[in-house]
Amino acid sequence: MKGNGALGVLAVLWLAVLFAAPLLGPGRLDLDAALASGSIDATILWQMRLPRVLLALVGGAALAVSGTAFQTLFRNPLAEPYTLGVAGGAALGAVLALHIGEWSGFGGLPAVALASFAGAAAVGATLVALARTERGADSATLLLAGIAISLSCSALILFIQYQTDFTRSFRMVRWMMGGLVVVGYREVGWVAPWALAGSLFLFARRWGLDLLLAGEEVAASRGLDLDRVRWSVLAVVSLMVGSLVAVTGPIGFVGLIVPHMLRRFVGHTHGLLLPACFLGGGAFLAVADLAARTVMAPAELPVGVLTALMGGPFFLWLLLRRRTPLA
Image 1: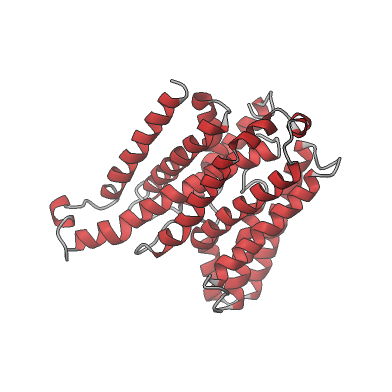
Image 2: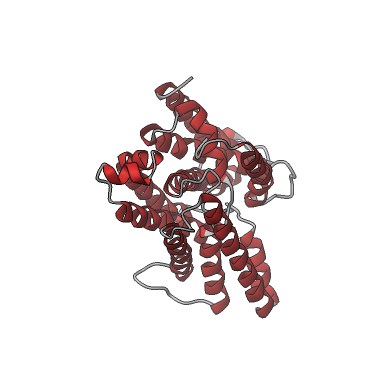
């Protein structure tokens, strides 16, 4: 099944996950009691499980769409916010904010979110600067640079954890595993506007992204402003990733796995691929989170650990089999 048919199947799957995932979990819910106000089952359903599923849907969408944009922008099939260090930069900024302590932020934005934005933007700007050089334009060199940046961010995070007290250090370690544990809708209300606005922005730039698939020389010959596309895509992806990391911690490889899976069904054209990644990425992360909170019940596995366990072998498989830039 190709094209619009595959997109329709993804929409049905997305709706199925939205309605089914909140009802599933390590503990059985009484649906009648859950639909009645004031019961424990109602609190679990409406204040814990449903917000968690909604956060997974918007967060997975943001990660998958960001991964698609990076793979096109850098002409690298292994690129995504986690492997290129953007998520690591956002995590470093958030950990610094947690280490400094409580402060009010600026313009109504939480301090952790502002620090995440700054970290993601700094790493993204570094990658774009490298991509504009003759040496850095090589996809393998760019990937290695992203890995080096990610390792450096991880080392700095470990240094900060070593310098802080036990309570904050434990909070940082748990947060770095990536998780979707929320109570209420505040986190969903924070992430959703960034994910939706960023995805719509990238969809509006779908023609420019399609031109980049043919190469920068061809895109420039068709009148595409390469610098403007680079910096706009970078800024939007940094905002999306930074807003999500500030709430969930780094969740890796969703932006790698989902776009490659969906290209086989909807093709490379961004007019179909971006909506498919929005739907498929959200459903993927919601199902992964459902597995993470049930496979070890009553204990719970952070979803970031589960996606990393899946993403490592998938990354190696892509590395060994890639034939074309975005195959």
